[in-house]
Image 1 (tube, rainbow, N blue to C red):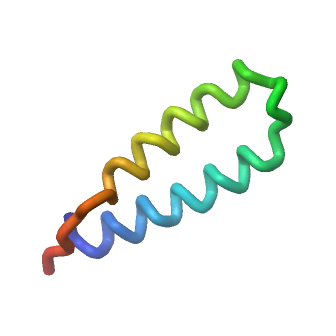
Image 2: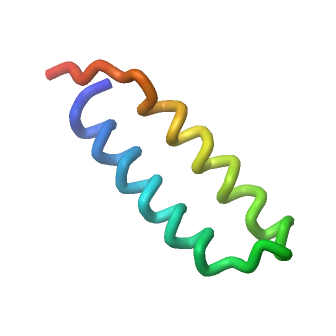
Length: 52
């Protein structure tokens, strides 16, 4: 993963976390897609090695 991809995922994680803070927990269906994408983004940057 290069630096640009890492920054993109980091930004996406921050955005998704902010969105999820605004959506009530009881809105399960509304939160579902955001939570799924957040999980995917976190997995994408877990244990990465940045390349040039």
